[in-house]
Length: 298
Image (cartoon, rainbow, N blue to C red; front, side, top):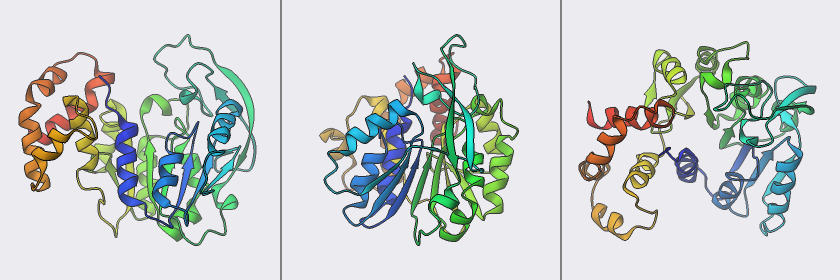
């Protein structure tokens, strides 16, 4: 079982975004997060979605044809810290692995194609924004390049920034997870795991190496974690096989505070968690075992 980080991330930004907000989706692919963001911001908001790969962009564009609110704006180019053209490694069978550099893949024999893509800086594309609530980055290791090209925007508008990170994706870049941490620290941001755990630099670097977490959120230091235990609840629901609308889950948590709710679910899911914790598949279960240790203190 692999933790459903996409649903955890969606739960996070749905807690953050409100009608009229502005959001940016970098690495939009076919709209997994573009469309939920658009629903969250309503008719007065706007999502700026960036996707460089032609096939994915076409699917994204086709999907937007049914967006009656008209609150999504598309860009068919990549983002980085330069303007011009760069080589892009496209992975046709696993497009989610595509990026500027080759990474460590689950199967090193998978097909790769090298294509040229147009590249711009987010500071140049969205220079006239007056507000920005949330940015989502999914660029297979190029996140720091994108962040450097958006430094003025981030410094000026102070959005929440979610991003994926792991050493397997950074292996061919000339920076490390420590550099990503230093970037945000220098901007006056703190880094949390998607579960809401505040991370020190050492914690973050270790997590990137061991892949304890797959998704992170950088939050302006003047703000606090805004999503309570919502992403953790997604994990617990997944482990128990409960759906989002599971009435038993809703009724069992009714009237409870967050701590009591988590304690109840931990007791009910103890066997599942112990079995997963013993698994030898670190790539799949390391994040679950990490959150298990956080929740139980073991």
